Length: 183
Image (cartoon, rainbow, N blue to C red; front, top):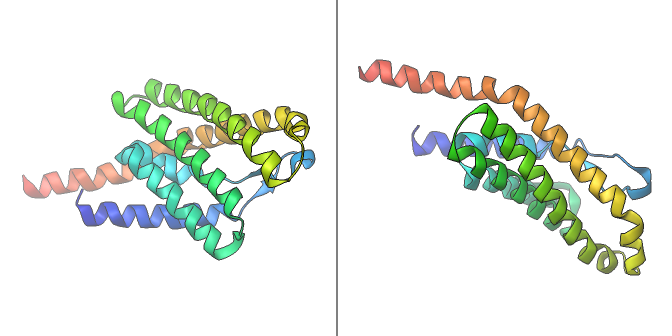
C-alpha cells in the first residue's frame, strides 16, 4: 500500500472515530462522567492493519478533533486519549507479533485488562483533583471505573473481532489487484 493510501485510511478512520465519539452515553448513572463511545473501534482496526503506532495516531487525532468540535474539557479528553492509545497500542503490538485470530483475541484481552488497571490508577489521581474532592470519592467510584473499562474495551474488542476480517479483506483485495497488474 502506498504511503498516500495509508494516510488516506488514517484520515478516514480518524474522521469515523470522531463521529463515533459523538455517540456517547453513560453506562452507570452514579458515575455519569464515564461515558461509553465506540470510537476506539476504528483505531483498533487500523492498529491491527498497520501497526500499533497507526492506531494510536487515530486515537490522538479523533480526541483532538472531538476536543475542538465539542468537548472543551481538556482533562477528560487527555484521559480518553491516554487510555485509548494504551488499549489500541497493546492490542496492536500483541497482534503484530503473530497475525492470527488467537493473537488478536489475546491482544484484546491483555489490552482490556492492562488498560483497565491503567485507567484505575489514572482515575485515582485525576478524580480527586478534577472534582476537587477527597480521595474517598475515587474509592466510592472504584467498582464503577473497573466495570466501565471492562465493559467499554470488552465491547470494543468484540465488535472489532466481528468486523475486522471484512475490513481487512477489502484492503487485501487492493493488494491482490496490484499484484495481478504487476504480474
